[in-house]
Length: 184
Length: 184
Image (cartoon, rainbow over all chains, first blue to last red; front, side):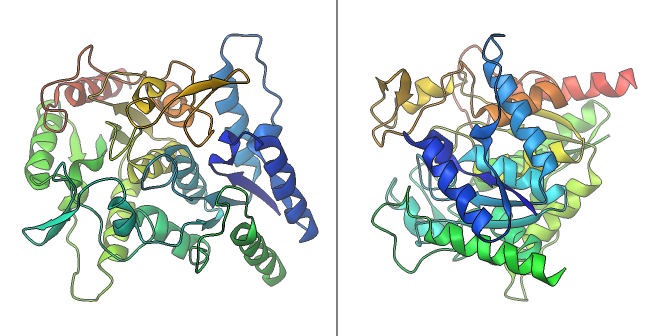
């Protein structure tokens, strides 16, 4: 089973090394991890971002599953690029798995970034935009896509010391994927 | 042509009214706008968020196109739920259109939220995470999905006074969708 390894890991200073570690964990469970940075990108054409897009899309099209790292990125919620990829794979009927190394629920995390109050029965931020308050870890579209297209979102009881490098929750997802292969 | 109207508009205090205005603009161009809040949600079961998910997914499955409001939401980038939906519709081969009422490029917006510096040839934020620096409005997966699955991202030269209620850029997307219908 080929698994697309989505997440803001590609933005880490040691992005290549994290990819190698994730692929090695997949291999240890008899699975193949496809990591975006393993695409050979033609940087000579001046269309670097388009070539990255095409490489990632081809990888997703070749994969049977996705493990999305939805650890909050540059704000209270998941990286939008990763969310896009989760939606893409959900529509393809892929096995959808996801994790976050931040165990808090979304509404709690929003409080770290903006004032949150109750207004007419809604939880709202400083801009008066509703804060989703369903006790979920992130936006309901992603959370329920995981419920229905894979298994429940994986998150630790306590955030690890290094939320960008700890791969315990990731490995739990790989194990879930390996179980699914066994069930086939 | 049925168009799924994705965006954080559903989180506005006057979310229903915005939906009505968007649907009316679609109708004026001979198109049908499907707005998430128009789903009848069963709130009696205790599974409200799951019912919202199922309603939205059924709407997406019934739509031929998506117009995604990618105006930055609660941070420098697009709403992750909207990003998920754009990915979902892209994988379904739908006509993908998107807009933002904030015309700045992503790397510039990140500077509003965190310190940005150059490090080993990469633009990085305070956490040393790479800031995408391709001159694009948002994450490259979304931006190129629009290029290839619809038309170039729509954004005004200057941000309107009310970024959450101005529908000029939205209407430009509707016009693009109507042209596509005409070309069929």
